[in-house]
Length: 67
Image (spheres, rainbow, N blue to C red):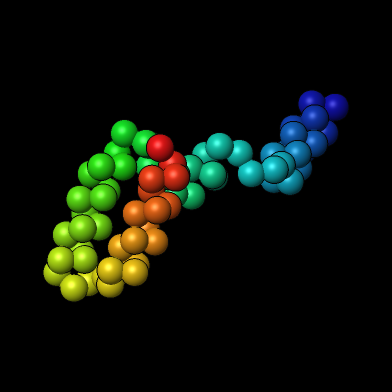
């Protein structure tokens, strides 16, 4: 009986929905307080020519929406 319970728990464990530890691998959006730092990084990338002005403005708009 105990062994059957163990097997049932193992089966349940294998077939469970993704838990928080699995979702932790998914990048989380940055907190709103970090937006100015990210804007500085984006501006630096724009100034160095890594991203275009249009890309900078698009990312800037996304970040400002989070505030």
